[in-house]
Image (cartoon, rainbow, N blue to C red):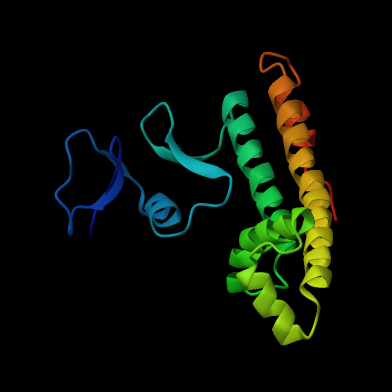
Length: 185
């Protein structure tokens, strides 16, 4: 009949019929071995040792305020990235990549209606539009994108400011940071 063992550092479970038992390992009962070594650890828990060195399930400690602040910022940045990417999802990547050139050419036409605009001229010709009309549409879309992206960027920056304003030594620092959320759509 095999015997079962546990070590805390490095954390591991062993059977004497399969493994070389490390020095300092404590013997544990088969049901405890089966519970902790052979089944997934429930979410929000980890394996620790009791005062006799026996393994046990324990709740994860609450995050430190510094770690929570960093996590919340990662979450906020991810939400901002998703919101910003939705502004261009209706367009193919190649077209999005051409936006800076389209913008430069549209701005050049605003200053000089005879400016060289190879990209806009070709797009306008294929669409059957005057290049000046296409340039006006491009400028209008640039303005609309600037407003929409500015709102998203401003929201992200406001939430970052709110996170950074939380006093990490305050008793309710964790609650304050958990309350800072990307607004629901």
